[in-house]
Image 1 (cartoon, protein in one colour):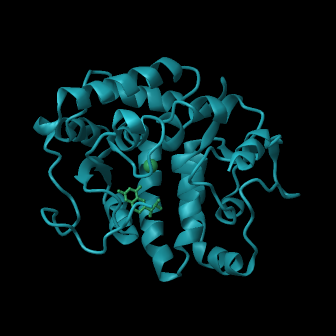
Image 2 (image 1 turned 90 degrees about the vertical axis):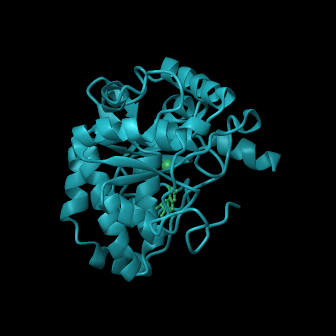
Image 3 (image 1 turned 120 degrees about the vertical axis):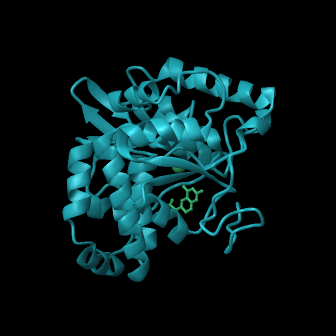
Length: 288
Ligand code: HBI
Ligand code: FE
């Protein structure tokens, strides 16, 4: 398991940020970025939300090599007032939330090795920057991320982080969106994954269920494999509106009395867009 330190490591600032040191990337590291980028870029038109593809464009992320955070931040700041900064790895929850609340996205500076190409435990620069940053160029999504950071800080006072973390997981990391042209991906964990960007949309195994805030916060998730249920939003506007207008305190009280749902469970009140076969998950369990 990746370990989380409790105070900033040597060389990091009090807010846990470190210099990206862009000049230190090797040609092999830039080539790894280009390889991952090309593989995803070829697949995402018609799969990723148009807002994601527009973000790649607006931020000039289509140019080759690992992005320089200063240059990326200058473009992003102009679009939505967000910046990207480097951190040594996972940071404590309160540090993470404070950065989001201040419209700063923290990103790992390291890139995966060839052996880790399709699976790694700690988010690397490809997941963090390719996966998360394009949507931060979208005004509404950018506001949602800030609202999430502010909500995250409040959740700590209610001891409800594990509930709110599920909202992040099932939206920011693994969310799907219903657009006029069809179902699309917006979650960073999906858009940065070669396998899951097909699986989440095409496979008959997972459930696809209309997003419901309280329902999502009751639902456990898998960190070690493809999701068993994806939640589908109608629009970023609606997601932002619900997050801003909901009083989370009574919700947390209700949740602390309710039982959690397993990642594959469907309940009567669900608006089920697709009932999954769970064949993939069963096959994987059999292999363990
Ligand atoms: N740290 N670097 C980093 N990246 C994250 O995504 C992250 C983190 N620390 C905590 C954290 N995420 C969680 O609080 C969220 O997943 C809710
Ligand atoms: Fe992520």
